[in-house]
Amino acid sequence: AISFNRVDKFKQALGDGGGIYVLGPQQGSVMEGNWVSRMYSQTGGAYYPDEGSAYWTLRNNVFSNSSTCLTDCEWLHIWTSTIHNITVQDSYTDTATQEDHGTDCLVVNTTVVPKATPLSQWPPAAQSIMANAGRRA
Image: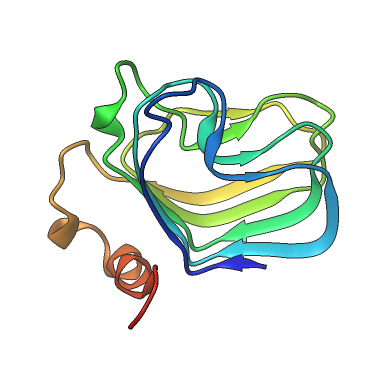
């Protein structure tokens, strides 16, 4: 599982990549409760299961501050048909831009808030994810 992480200010130097990047099949794996923000390069995506990735469930994740990209960022980057059997559900983002070219991939219940919406005005479920993501002392 990749859970409850906080990733901020990423892809400042390299073009390709993601805030949370996975590669290859991972039967029954879950990515949940993560908050990714401020992506600086538009290639790749905030959540990026790369070529050959399969059998993941991504749920209850947030991508915010997409306005830091020079052009519109992709919150989700499923860019090719060799990515398969991935379910993405209950996501929160401030950009509708995504790629979903995978095989048997399902993206449901995505809430898109307007860009520059203060975090305090995001839906309560998104605020809860953001409050619980990241290292704790």
